[in-house]
Length: 290
Image (tube, rainbow, N blue to C red; front, side, top):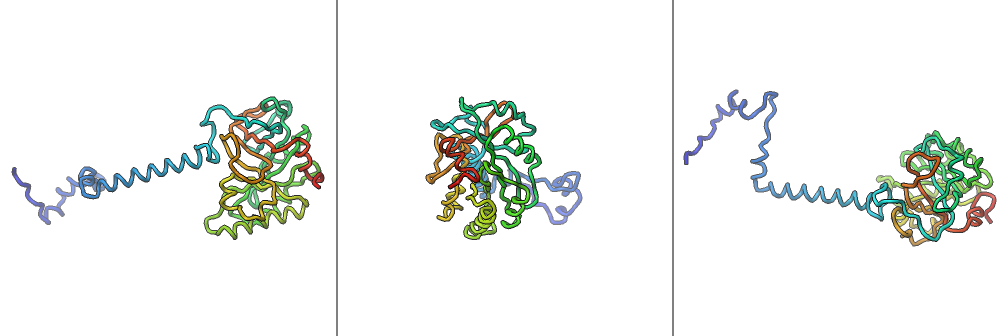
């Protein structure tokens, strides 16, 4: 076999050699074939496959799997937990303009709609642009209503609490204020994060003299809010596409799907159930607690 002559340094620096190894824009071609022939080529391929597999597993575990938190309609029709009679929904501007007459007359599995949780604020400066209308309409149509604040890691707990109190005026017969907390900042440890959450809860509790409701998903509760001091608060647990809540503690509300459909609302809406009787639900409201 005829051996190829080695390329001299002078020729390697010449224009002809650069033309053969570079494209017309002056960018060097990457020889994938030679790259994968190297000894570490297989290691790169194996590493890439492992990384892709890990991403697929994480996506499934946290979003798609039955124990995941939030992924819509991958498990067929909406399942309705058996044994519960008090049903409700939670809404925000994502539901757009609601036909409240149709919504009031709707039912979930033959049970009337009893309560509605409404997004009010987020962080220390954002108000849901449908909050005032939704909050007013809910009461006018005979539904027990609640208002929830979406926790932000970009604002202090005090600023968020006082912003919520400035924007929301709860009345007798309304559900206690709700703190929706789903994320912990990476730059704070669990103890400091818990103190921040307690700061919000205490400020709002001092205003309304009721324990605020904590909304979160059950894994978050177990990982970040497992201190005994949080067990005194009512819980609203998000856990989708399962027959029962896996959280072992006491809970009051269960958000069991984000793929609900009701007359009066275009698109999907979250379905919730209350863990008790209608009388117990009314007893939970402001001015009716012992």
